[in-house]
Length: 130
Image (cartoon, rainbow, N blue to C red):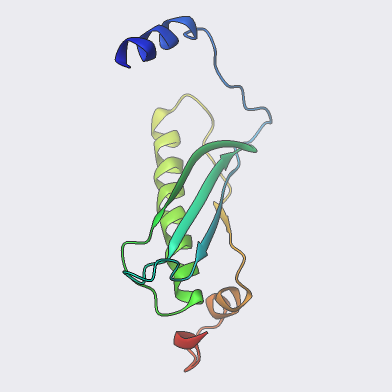
């Protein structure tokens, strides 16, 4: 297996990705499925991070902690992609080979209740059970 990987790397050493555009734009998309596994009550999360529209990172795994609601599962997934995207933004800036990423990283997720709660400065008694 290692030999195959080394051969592949040798054959493709001159291949690379080119991301067009003037300014670098980093964005993330996340999603979660609430308590898919009946054995441990943990939700599944997934995310993808794109740089100028090209995928540069992705993940699919069980969440480390059990969420109490769909909204909480979505928050956990959004936090996971946000942490990875911030790390990636800082890493790109530390490289110093490209202009810095001036715009904030935008994170997309598909839960309307989670979006409404994120915009609301006070918590709701229904937040836990959505």
